Length: 460
Figure 1: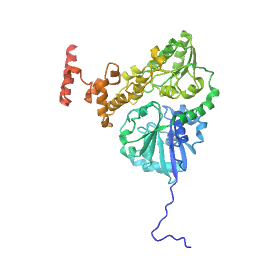
Figure 2: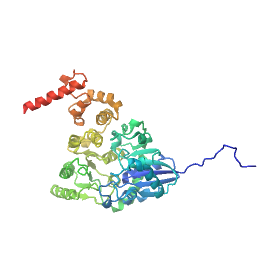
Figure 3: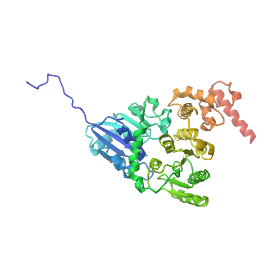
Figure 4: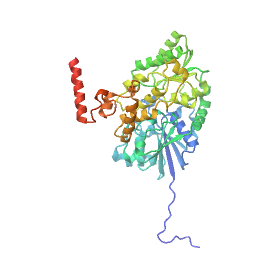
């Protein structure tokens, strides 16, 4: 029998698929590993973990594939590649290809990474900024999955994304850090959220913990202080951040804790630990400063902290929601006032932590650990804050914002908003109640603002 096909009939061989997973932190890589273990992804022909080192000085900061515990994640990927090495000497956070050079960069990457003519799929984090945005732009037609490993997934997309990128996003994979609250990120493109199963994520973290536990000091139910790098983000000065950590220590001791562990952020200045040591000595507390780069979640497993204290770290919610540990916040009130501009992407994480978690100096609330998103009207609050941050990207949230502000704006919730912002958007609360009869008219609002300015000048 002849095997010749009829005239006009063609055969099309299936293109090989390569999926590139991009990660900049061990926590993010663990999230990807959990998503893979939970079958959130179909199996490609080839998988690549592309390591991104976004530190200010990547040359002096270990990348995630050099951190303790990574070897337990490595087997899930066929190849490990470095984005920093690929684009050297450019910095990943500040470089993007010029539009005319995109085809050249795609050709270069296909040669350098042995991609051939494979069909490319991407799994990236923080797609609104580089390096994830740059990679998505280079692989022009690749479908994209976005994964989020922190509280920022509940906030609005910080920048308007080119539709040529946004319309290729298939879904948002995220951890269920705040049960009952749905992510706002990327909803402007109708991107559906999908939860990475918590039990699978905890299993992956357990693997990491087994690997690095031998290098940790012997700890049993200490108070764990979580350092961040707010001065590097220019939210606080270095002195103010140092003082914040000292206040955390003092607050933990006042609650009766004598064994204190401070986990600094990798980019935190060394003087933080020395200041804490002096304070601990004065208070008669036993302080351990962890120099080993280890995930906070590993400490949750191995040390079982009696209290976890932080400013607005995502780890506060992994501690509370995933491990059932007592938590407390400190410093969110100052950050809500200081974050600028109002659109700062840290605003929603700070708002969530401030709204839900007890303040360290409020002993009854810390002991009660009352955390109830429904009771706090969190969904409405985040919709209102999200609209105030990015009204042009999320115009459909206006009704929800007006509803929340009209019913819940009071002396406490004012901390989450700025009157100038509400005024510019003609939202409830923009003008005093006695002037609420003024219609939403731009000219009248301008006259009111000018009158207030004249009154302030006259008082001087």
